[in-house]
Length: 99
Image (cartoon, rainbow, N blue to C red):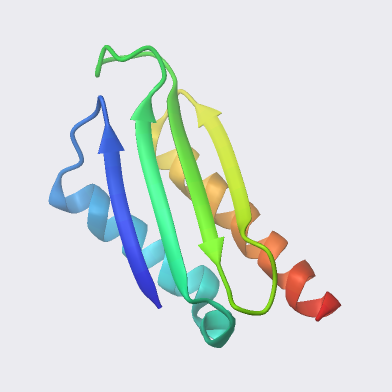
């Protein structure tokens, strides 16, 4: 499973990237065989890099079904990451159940 983590208008330090990778591994490891690539874009909605809403956009690609795209916006960076990954996991479970 290839993971691409990008940021726009926000600094992602090693702790945040590690948090994202760990959460993805926990949430998606049992469905890994269905995933070809995961792209995550973290951005600051108002572009100020301090305060304001944070956006987490997740795209899960698979050769078995159409891409899953999840977007979430919250004030807290870690919360928006966790919530988007949880939603992506649930969406992937539903897609796999339909295949």
